[in-house]
Length: 188
Image (cartoon, rainbow, N blue to C red; front, side, top):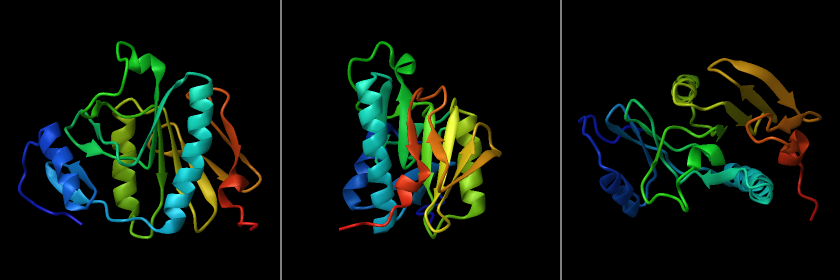
């Protein structure tokens, strides 16, 4: 849902102050786009994957993992907030801690978890922007269909199903997780 159709140049401070209104936004072509709330399944999948990815990345000092509250400033001025983001340590050289504002560029690994409200056009536009801004690997997780699409460019390369393994490849070298672990029924 677009909040305003008045194009504005937003400073980091102005954009971050918007979160005080209780909504999440992305900035797309100068317009605020409300991201809405995700359901429990979306949040659970994000937490599950963040926990696995974060533990591996920290243990191996590969870089940082960020959640969906983190916006990334892209070359075209858009600010995108993927569900999960990984930035390699090579791109963080010179920093001893996270910046207060937004990271310039997109993450090395982007993870998007589809929500019922996502459109094909919206997702494709995001994917194109991420790859125009240094993303090297992107995973789209489809909870209802229980699969993961793997991208190295704006076109998908692989479809992973239950029984396959999610692989960090050379972006998060050594990371692997069974796709089935994302979709396991609870056993409690």
